[in-house]
Image (cartoon, rainbow, N blue to C red; front, side, top):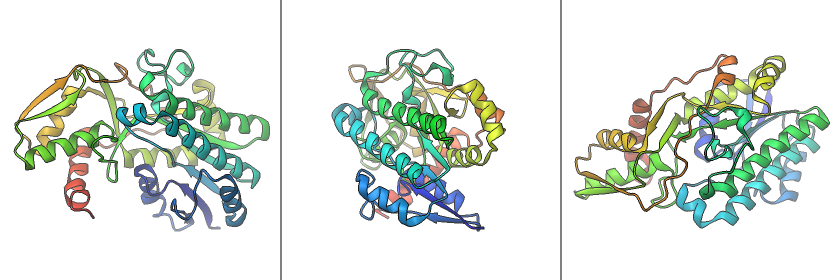
Length: 319
C-alpha cells in the first residue's frame, strides 16, 4: 500500500534532503506544497489541506531560520512564525488523524552553558543563548507540543534535535546565513576579487559540531522508521527527543582555515572579537541515536568540498 507523506518545508535545505531520500522508495507518495500554494502560518488553510489530502505521515522541516545576525535583528518574526508553523501543522495532523509525525528542532534549545557533551535531559536546565532565544523557545514549544499530544491522545509524534547543519541549497545570504555557507561565500568572493583578507566574527575560539544535511535526512528517516518499542526505550534515557550529530567538534578558526583551503583562498584571516560569537561550545551527546544503530557517515572536509562544488556550479551561477 502506498504511504502518503507530507514534507513541510520541502524547498529548504533540510526538506530537500529528506525528499532526496524518500523519493527513492516507490511505495511512498510524497506530498509537497510551496509557500505560495500553502502558507503554513494560515491556520484555516493548513486545516483544509490536511482534511483534503489524507496524509499518513508528516516530516515537519518548515521553519524560519538564520544565523546570529538574523536572529538578533528579527526576533519577533523568528518566534511568531515558528510557533505558528509548528502549532498549525501539529494540531491539523492530530485533528485529521495523522498518527505519525517527525518534528525537527535545533540544538539551540539547550542552555548556553550546558555541560558537554549535551544530553537531551539538559533541556530547560539553564538560561538560553540570548542571540537566538526567541527561535529556541519556539523549538522547545514544538517539542512540548508533540510530547503533549503523545501523552493525551496516544500519538506517535517524534522529535529530533540536529546539530549545526550544512549542505546544498543552504542559505548563502551575506547577513542571514549560518557560519559554513557564510564563510564559503566570503572566501569565494575574496578569491574572485583578490581581496587581501577576510573578516570573521568573534575570536574564532568557540567550538561547533557540524553535520552534512544528507546525513541528517538519513538519520531522521531511520528514527521515523524505528519500531515504537525501540524508540520508547531510547526515550526512557533521552526524555522527549533524540539528538542528531556527528560526534565531532571544531573551533570556528579551524573551520575557517579548512574552508579557505577548500575554496583556494590564500589571503589573511582577521577575527573581530567585538562581534557576537554565540555559545562557547555545543557538542551533542548522540548516545540515544547510537542506541537506534545510526551514526553519521560524511566527514566534514568531504561535505564542505561537496557544498563548495554545488555553490560554484549552481548557486553562484544563479541556477
